[in-house]
Amino acid sequence: MKNKLIKGTFILSAAGILTRLIGFYYRIFLSNTIGADGMGLYQMIFPMYGLCVSFAVTGIEMAISKYVAAAGAGERSGECIQVLKAGIRLSLFFSCLTAIGVYLFSDFIAAVLIGDIRCSILLKFIAFAIPACAIHGCIIGYFLGKSQTGIPALAQLSEQITRVGVGFLLAFLLSKEQEYLSPVTAMEGLLAGEIMSSVICVIALIKDLRKSKKNGALSEKSYQKKIFSMSFPLSTSRVITSVILSFEAILILRCLKVYGLNHQEAVSIYGVLTGMAMPFIFFPSTITGAISSVILPSISEAQSEGNYVKIARTTSAVTKYCFSIGIFFSALFYLYGTRIGSVLFSNEDAGTFISILSWLCPFMYLGSTLGSILNGLGLTKLTFLVNVLVSLSRVGFLWLFVPVYGIRGYLWGILASQMISAFLFLYFVKKHTHFRYRPAECILIPSVITIISIGSSFLIYHFLELWLPLPFLCLVLCIAVACLIFAILLFYPQIRQKKK
Image 1 (spheres, rainbow, N blue to C red):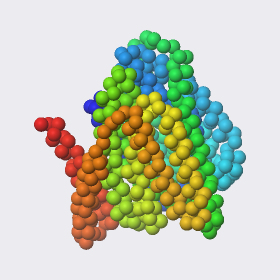
Image 2 (tube, helix red, strand yellow):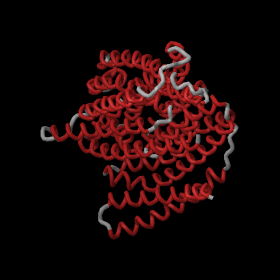
Image 3 (cartoon, helix red, strand yellow):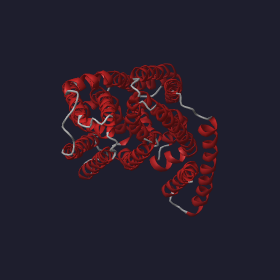
């Protein structure tokens, strides 16, 4: 199981890192092309998009992954097809229903729920993207359940390349007409990316089905009930979280106005936070997200085999490495945050937000992975309760502190909610898997390695700053050096020990 976990994590991480790097450059391009106000509008519709995807896709995708893994572990590979068919039928039904509702009521959602009628046209593009997202989401869950991570990685990469390529092309064709383009150009790229990802997944699925057995012990209807039973708490949790996020997007603008900002200033600062600062904080979650995607079917497979020793060992390793990665990136973003904001975005606020949000990293990366372990064990109701509690706590901070302290009050709320999430997930995973973790391995050693790696990069940075008059290249090289030294010091002893 460990070999599959490492291989799958590596493939998804590599694709995710490349995807995020392309996305970073694209966001920098968008911030200069559609402006801070345009970025604010672009980001304001994503909570609604997340809500729709959560309702129609996310829970079903995870359920497909779990049951395909369980069927494969029990040598019932023919049932994998039944699982996929059942999942696609459910997901397409909910996604088409959602898409029609969003398209027909886009003006109402934009004006009343989001608070800006300019988002109406953006919501119409979302409506067309939802069914495409349902198709490739289900197929990705199928391949993840079979531990074939190459197809999900290819789909993810092709989606981003298409999205960025279409965005660049439209910007090139329309840039002569006006100084700042509309966020519509970015949404057209998003829709094209979802369609391309679906096409890649369908082609891969057709090839895979030709090799698969057609027999299955359970009928498609039986799997529809099982998938719905598992996906319901997952989807409900994601829907409630997305509703709260959508409510946050509206509430944060109103609270910022109470704090003293006008509407355009509030939208701009929201765009800087969610469109510039947050993507940097989420970047390392490419690795932990890959672990989460791979570990859910792996845990399900081990559970179906009754091998709880493997579950405990895998959980211990995942906890150690996710928290170690979080410690490193927390220090990296805190120390380099202001430089990142000024060099990449020419925006001091972005740098300040990155430095403040850096404290999220250990808790956010660990919590998301532990949540996947609970889902893999079938404890979806626990993840539901924790996610709802965390979301409500964040809204509470937003309501109480933003009118008094401005955007910093919201950042404090995000940090507090992620800490609550991580500690609750850690408690429940420890209770159900009885895994062991050592503070020295999870905290002390990673902290020492972090000091060595980032300290070395700072020395190099100050040297390059004198001799290399290219701030962007200097910053990228030094961050890359810090990451390389950290990875070598953290993983090399383990590799060497295995060789012996």
